Image (cartoon, rainbow, N blue to C red):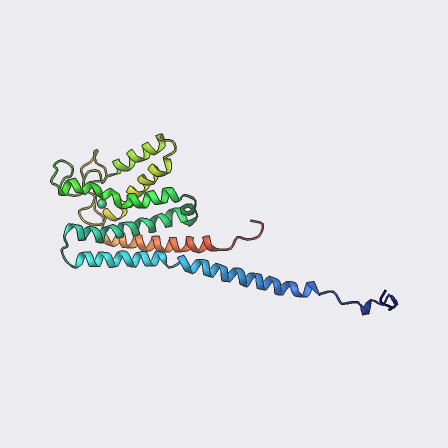
Length: 225
Ligand SMILES: [Zn+2]
């Protein structure tokens, strides 16, 4: 007992907080918080497609500045292949797919450079592996063989499928640089060479699509979705 009589007067009791008044403020705070989180998540990646395009252009300017030795030319060319492949893969597959398939992504990016290993026998003077340009293995035939193997093997599908994707991505650059590609070997020996400007437009378009997909991916999920 505290000695005070219970008068039943409710005005003496501590007033309950007005939940309805604070609700909009809480909601605004949550929205601002989600917005800040989205901005932090997005700014980390949103510039990466533009950076990749600028890097490729810079590497190509350096490569065309003078006649380099084969190793130096390779050191300038392979990062441009990796950047092109990452950019196009990001634009086509999107960041969600890349996150869910790290093994295939890694395999594809490695293959997008490793396919140039077939130049080594060419530089060593081995005959019958090229017709004056890039080796015959730089053709859709290689992609087809890898794709069939990927369908047949169990447990290594992500690895081999990634290799097929990587070789295909490699051609995005090769078809518009150097001597082009004998794309349909062994069925056709015609060299396919597209303008370099078209390659640049593909990069710009891929960067725009990739940036949009990064922004969409970083958007906070709506409640109930
Ligand atoms: Zn190549």
